[in-house]
Length: 212
Image (cartoon, rainbow, N blue to C red):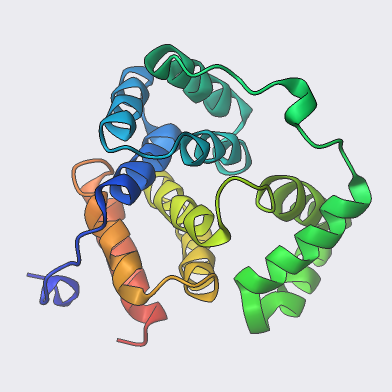
């Protein structure tokens, strides 16, 4: 038994467990698996806004095709109609940039300025897109709090085996208000959903984040 499993993993509430499993499956699963995960979200009484925000934000981490496919499966399974266009806020570059800077600083905390410098050194456009598109337009949306968004991102990163981004968002989940026990519960909820090797690496990485 690995040291990361020496104590019982806290169980998540059923709705949150179903939500993070859905996020993982959207990121790396097949369409039938997405369909099943959508039904599980319904069975667990996951609020519809959480499901739809989870699907929408998957566009950032997993790409537009997977986001489209997941929303299509959700509409089929749930029968829930799309919101009216007039209920969607008008695009605002200024708002997205301002909110994006605020949200990104919450997620990265003391590493925020260094992150901006590092991404700008890769390419200034990537820094602009990260703030305006990622943290502003997507992760600052209404409908689901940042803490839940970060937990969904953690699940997606585990599913995709994106350890570098996972490292950042494990910290981000803590910075957004999750207790370490809640994050451990997210990893526990992913058993049987993501590859075992991915989950083992995630647990080892989380132990490093916690200084264990």
